[in-house]
Amino acid sequence: MKMDDLIVVTGAGGFIAGALTRYFHDKGFTQIRAVDKKPLPEWYQQVPGVEALCLDLSERDTCVRACEGAVEVYNLAADMGGMGFIEHFRVECLRSILITANLIEAAYRAGVERYFFSSSACAYNTELQKEPQARALKESDAYPAMAERGYGWEKLMSEIFCQEYWAERGMKTFIARFHNVYGPFGTWDGGREKAPAAICRKVIEAKDSGKHEIVIWGDGTATRSFMYIDDCVQGIDMIMHCDDLIATPINLGSSELLSINNLVSLVEEIAGVKLQRRYDPGAPRGVAGRNSDNTLIKRTLNWEPLTPVRQGLKTTYAWIEQQYAARKAGKHARS
Ligand code: NAD
Image (cartoon, rainbow, N blue to C red; front, side):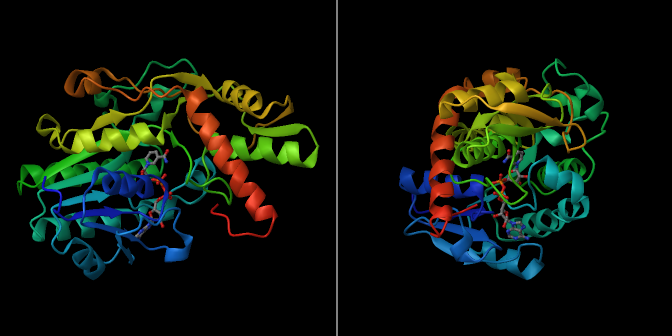
């Protein structure tokens, strides 16, 4: 890629695409177009020198506008959130297929050289994730398909779009299945937040209120792996520029498995508190166990996400604490 080739990042007002925009900017790329349907003041990050457009990409014409002149397109726009959101708003999740259908066609017509899609571990067969100690998921485990209702099926179908735009039309497409991503500049309140941010916020609230207890969704035994945002953006870049991975879904996740109880303990340690745990068995909890099998990424890229969760959580906790304090003081906070 030339340093002045136009890179388009969608969903850039959100968590991961915001960090990706900053990553390319810091690498020295001079032509970056960031797109999101959120009004600009609500974006987590606005990177100086980057063209920022507020467009709803579920429509054809806005996708055409977004892709004008683009050499690479990174599609991270989606209506999504943690389990609380994806279990309750399945229709909204499914409707993200409109972004895929319109954006990939616009990218193809614009002559884009490479197209990236952010898929999810929720595309995997849920039958394989019924135990906390379920074996790590390898890429072939998406089929036979029994994805997460709503959100997971949309991801699987969008992957198929990418595969067919390569097979039938020759556009180079790349597909990463993200496993939980966390870090600063992401959702930490409001209903769309995922477990690491939600737990950091609850611990901060408990400390602040002096009421030393925490409500944990489920029974705390569910397991997941958590990838730090810096690993995620580096992985996206590496996957997008590896021709061995054209139209090939690949796990992009940490393989350090933790239970939700372990995650709470880590955040307690960072915060220097010990809280009374109350469990809410009726709350959304997702599958019982999920981890990333990193055999393929290690083989093809000689790399895998390795930031220890303890280290990544420290910066995440500090950022959320700052946002919490700002909001409490009546200042603008990004939640
Ligand atoms: P996010 O909610 O922070 O960002 C998504 C952004 O997309 C939001 O800012 C939203 O406004 C925007 N968007 C939604 N609909 C749009 C539309 N019609 N037009 C334009 N913009 C629109 O989420 P994130 O965590 O940054 O996730 C980015 C991508 O990665 C998503 O595709 C998500 O499904 C995928 N993913 C994330 C995780 C994770 O742990 N965060 C895990 C697996 C997959």
